[in-house]
Image (cartoon, rainbow, N blue to C red; front, side):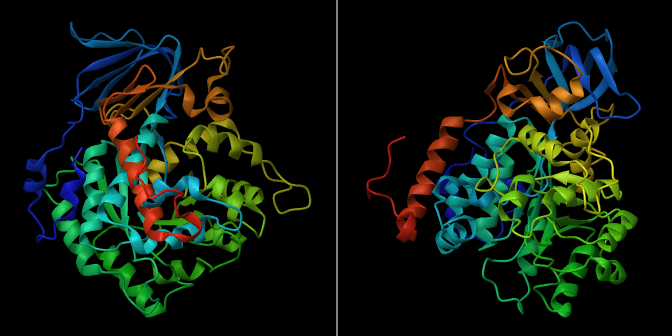
Amino acid sequence: MAGLSMLTSAAPFAAPAAYAQQGTSTKLPGRSELVIRKGSIVTVDDKLGNIEGGDIHVRNGEIIAIGKDLQVPAGVEEIDASRRIVMPGLVETHWHTWTSAVRNLLAPEFEYFKLKGAIVPHMTPEDFYAADMLAMTEALNAGITTIHNYCHHVMSRETVEAEMRAHQDAGIRALYTFGHRDGLANDKLIDLDLAAGIQANWFGSSSPLDGRVTFGINSRGPASLSEAIFRKELDWAFERDLMVAMHAGQNRYSYSVVPLKQMGYLGPKTLIVHFVLAKPEDRAVMAETNAPLSYSVHSELRLGGGGYQAQQLVAMANDGVLVSFSFDGNTLAPIDMFETMSTAWYMGIPYTGSETEKMKPLNFKQIIEMGTINGATALGLGDKTGSLTVGKRADITLVRADDLNMIPHGFVDGMIARTARASNVDTVIADGRIMKRGGKIVGLDVEKVKSDAVRSAFNLRLKAGGRIAPSSTTPPAF
């Protein structure tokens, strides 16, 4: 991983090759050829379905064959999955990863927004790097191979490049969306010149990100911005064929998305987040235009003071909206997509006396799709990941089916959507690299990730003071 000392340089944009040459202290594992044998495979591919006792052949980071008793060249590594459920790597679609180091500083009357406000002025490039590495390492540990890093606190070129180095070092697939600096006046544009520079230097033909990370922007949305500012930011993104993401309210009805359709901004490249109090006409135009939803199940429950969280989830799915799952932040959700899926399944029933009364409950297959292929499609990555399909990248998670909380073996869809938890994840393959094996992260320096996060949290507490001031000014030993 790139050392923290590298993150404070104020030099001009370096060529992408220069970043690659700087290297990392712990190189990512190579992409070896391998075959996964005799697993209970949940492909999330409608043409293939589930395959009991199936094999998956991987070469150069790509899935090249799926079936039973596959023939592979001599010497190819074999992974015994006879007591494993094999599934696509999970996909998360909205996560403010930069807040990750302070998750345990919530307190009564001092929850997410107050905590975020306390640390905003004090974040350094080192803090962004440490927070992102913690988030992405924890994601891989939980079987998540794709995330959406929704940065809504772009402080400087240095902080964004710190995040880029974290993406380079972590090995996970991602969409990175570039947003505003927290507190930026609503009559001010996001820094589009900086966004253009980041896109050119980190996402061009010489990108050191290995094709794993894509670039987009996030908007403060039409409820916060004037129409002129909103249009200028979205036009900038759409002219470059970028993904755009925007929050749409948790505890109140912030805005209708119907005008977005009329403006030409609603479609598969516009990710709407939360939208707990969306109206039928909003769902109708989202379904019509294939605009995806990112639903942060646990965050909606904690911050959705207007209610209707469960009913909206059911209504979105029944009305044909592409629903995906997200965390929002680790201060608002456990980093466990299995728990997210399970909670959504329990929530996902029609409610008497509501508009959902005659709708269908969510089933296990739908829930798994929301945690995999729907998320990949929502991030514009459905052709690369989200299902176990020949030709897609090898983003694969193996779940122990013989753990105490998983037995006895039964219908695998229910085992994944309701029973499993992150603690059951045995092996994770991200873009063809084995990043977790035998229940332990092997592709990253976990102790360094942990020590960097602890040091970052301490420094932020020291600088912010007040409610989150540490009890001692002596840095913690870790």
